[in-house]
Length: 313
Image 1 (cartoon, rainbow, N blue to C red):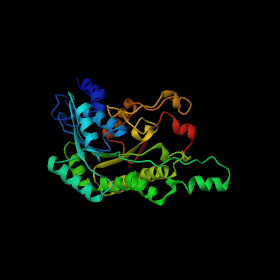
Image 2 (cartoon, rainbow, N blue to C red):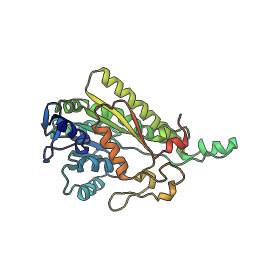
Image 3 (tube, one colour):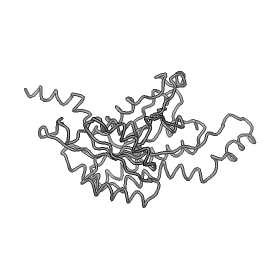
Image 4 (cartoon, rainbow, N blue to C red):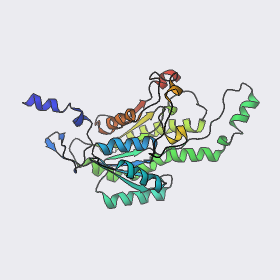
């Protein structure tokens, strides 16, 4: 009987469970079986990878707050994907590039919840493409130095959104995240930064500012993980570095269901998987990184083999 109970710990619904108290399922802990509530906050949750993460958690029972600058987009997500699921998706508008807005968001979550279990910093932007092929110094200067994406303001905006806000969002929510770790023995709250394989590969991919910002985001994740650990706070900090996934960043748009599409043939020769990433690929990575209590300070590349082909630093 004891061995059979041990076997239950290896079932998928127990290994990757982010169950909400409102659901009928139970999840294991070290002392037996009981219900716990998981509260998540996802920035940039109105489309792309943020929406994939929100669905992955909410469909499996978590209460998920999604933020973004556009109320209409967030409301659309709630209307479409918050129906007949064990968890919840709740929209809140916020600008995570503004410190005062972040503080207001903390106060808003604090007024609704006693703790936060999962923080996913997903919001991000990219810059325009720059041609790097010319072998003429003058031509390369024209494409890089004179290009609109070469404007220092564009670099500042990219780093403000892709790097700085990760620091301010994570540090602002530390007290609520610490309380999240106190809800269940054996559960530690987690911060999951969505970075990119663009911060790992050695090529610029025609956008220097974006790739540099993602490399910085990966390093910032490791620094935060280390400092939070040395402060003895029971909070894990990791990052997922996606390859190419359909999003408004990679396709410039989303459809009436807030989803984007990339033709498979566009990446048949660029990845070992011979295709772009799917919703399910990201969802399983999100569940792994948020529920695995032994994962800390790590970069999880979910890229179909892109880094293998492009080469890393």
